[in-house]
Amino acid sequence: MPPSLYSRIAGLRLPFLYAMALLTVVAAKGPLAWQWGALILFGALVRIWAAGHICKNELLAASGPYAYVRHPLYLGSFLSALGIFFMIGRPALTVLFAAGFALFYGCKIWCEEVFLSSKFGAGYSSYRQRVPAFFPNPFKIWGKTPYAFSIRKAIQNGEIKSLACTAAQTALVFLAAGLRQP
Image 1 (cartoon, one colour):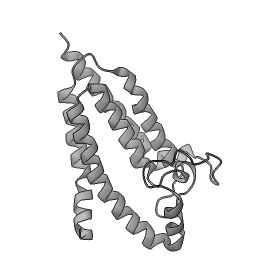
Image 2 (cartoon, helix red, strand yellow; image 1 turned 90 degrees about the vertical axis):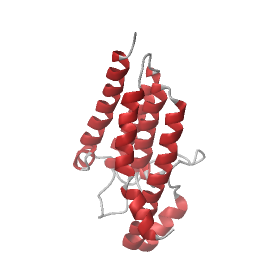
Image 3 (tube, one colour; image 1 turned 135 degrees about the horizontal axis):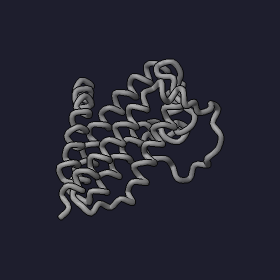
Image 4 (cartoon, helix red, strand yellow; image 1 turned 30 degrees about the vertical axis):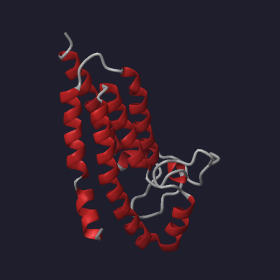
């Protein structure tokens, strides 16, 4: 596939997510499997943890969750959204979401890795060989990473907005499901 096509597909990821968010509200009906809220929260916490370790376009992030996956922000988004889809209990929508996420974010990851390779060169190449892209290696030993988490960095990187969107989406699903209960 030509690089420009990857970029175009990656550019459609936000409209896809907005459409899927609308579908969760439209498809929600009670009773909800509320226990999936833990997955939604876990995904949000992964995003906050990741955002507290990056200095965008300045340094190669390799600490915190970046020591275990190269794209923990996307992983956190995926887990939160997956939790919402599991909560509404619509398997077909869950599969549609997962397939679309793989397509749109797969292209975004490809574009991002091209950029990071050109920006950080051999350092990124070495990092890429050690750390999986999206799913952590379950056999990797968890330990300390060289840089500490900073809540200030997480806030500067926009995670308050991301957390607010996740909370609003979850609340809308609960509201819609509550309105549709007999």
